[in-house]
Image (cartoon, rainbow, N blue to C red; front, side):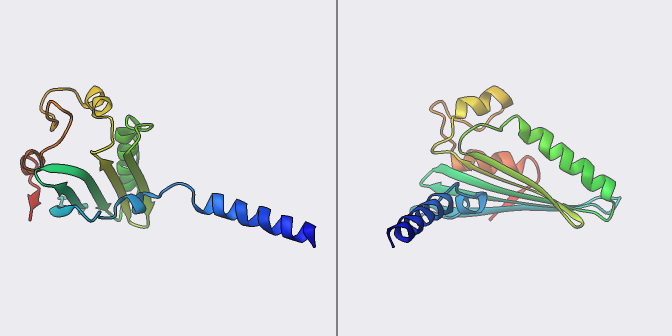
Length: 163
């Protein structure tokens, strides 16, 4: 009986430890109680029938961004074009791998390539982002914070509408 109890305890412990493992990117997209959300979109269809749907959600508290969730989807019947987009997304975001609180997932599913990025601006090391992106024309304040209005204006430059 003791062997069964010890075995059950070990199995329960392993399940508990592995079941409470890494937080998924979907978990990180959840809205916190103190946050408000502003949704931004842009939809484009190119001449070669590639549809691009861009959805950015700005989570903020007061004047400052707490996190962003970016979902970019490219849809095409041409598998070669989808592969090019997948490779391009992976190349762009490879520079950010290893930065805590900067999470990206690129997937190809049927006729769609999607890139989901979650950045927690309250916790991410903004200096690491600036090292990659440069100091020119970035969205960061001197203290490393991001103002909601600054980010909205940045998105507007690229034809993205926020509501």
